[in-house]
Image (cartoon, rainbow, N blue to C red; front, side, top):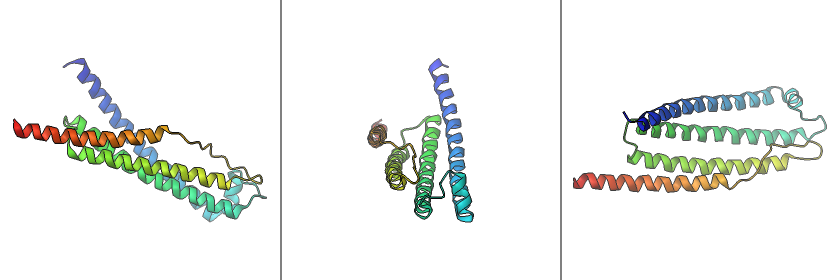
Amino acid sequence: MPQSFHTSSNALRASRRVLSVAVALNYGYAGFIVAVVAMLTVNRDWTMTAIGIRESAPRDSLMVGMLLLAGFGMTGAAMMHRILRRLQAIVATVQGGDPFVPENAVRLQAIAWGAVWLELLHLGVGAVASLMDSPAQPFDVDWNFSFTPWVAVLMLFVLARVFAHGTRLRDDLEGVV
């Protein structure tokens, strides 16, 4: 077999492993959020002190903000799960030798929309964090805005259309032959 085939097979196997690890890490991330929310609801004052919230800080409003951020985090974990599972399905079709199937165009479109929602959640995190920040209790989540993810979203939408068009062209060609 040509060397390029072995390289691409190794890359596909590595991709499958990386995606499996990413799914597991995403579950861990969601579990961590659930644990923090549970601790906040069971023993709010102890948990807030443990994470560095000062006694003089407006703990009620900070609690609302942290629960909102946790909701964003859980929503993000759910969106990421959907993205990773679709990406695993695409990798499986590549490994199976036929990635140009209509389902992959649909999967790429869904991944693009998931990325849009993740970026909107990211904007929400920045807004909530800035509202929670005060002189009494600095709240820095190291948030910043970047155009790069938005460009990636546009590329995903374009790639989904390319896959859809390529699949139609291949189907038309097979119908002619």
